[in-house]
Amino acid sequence: MVLVLAGICLVCSALLGTVYAVTKAPIAASELQKVNAAIAAVTPSFDNVPSEAVRDAEGGQIYTATLSGEPVGYAIKVSVSGFGGPLQLMVGFTPDGTVYNTSVISHAETPGLGAKIVDENCNPRAQVQGKHPAVNKLTVSKDGGEIDAITASTITSRAFLKGVNAAYDIFKNNCLAAAEEPVNTEENEPEQ
Image 1 (cartoon, rainbow, N blue to C red):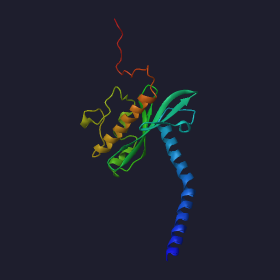
Image 2: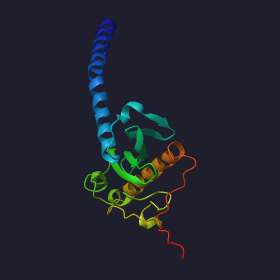
Image 3: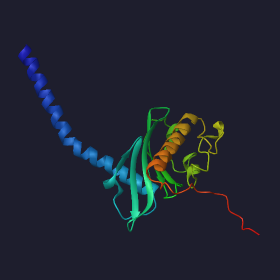
Image 4: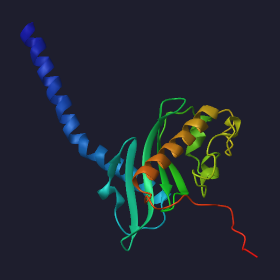
């Protein structure tokens, strides 16, 4: 009986190992394709392959998009806790730190409520575009911020904005030149 059970365990282990080996490469390719699509969605046009030069940073990963060797944008991949579980985001910044666009890579939010976060035109995704986290308060309006939450999904909206702010912190600490000052959105009036 022990030999039969040991044989069954050995066969099952061999099958699991084979399935893992066969599916590992396609799963990795699929994940890379998701990341590349997210980078393309959140940065201006580029001519390099940002996913080939990924940099790890505390709290996320940095992908630099360049055009003719000059940085045109940075895509920062972060993960935060949403209402239903992890919310994985890609946040794109222009070289001065302005949010270019955002993309939700994966989520476990409630269908019909928090899952609306994947829609590009939903609040808060549409409202963070073109804003600079150093100048604008990127939190939900219920918390004194400038961004409207998704109706009945305040927790998801807060998590999303927490991810955007976390991505900006990574950008600020790793990409923004030390000598650069944050963007001033107020127009300077000429002296008279």
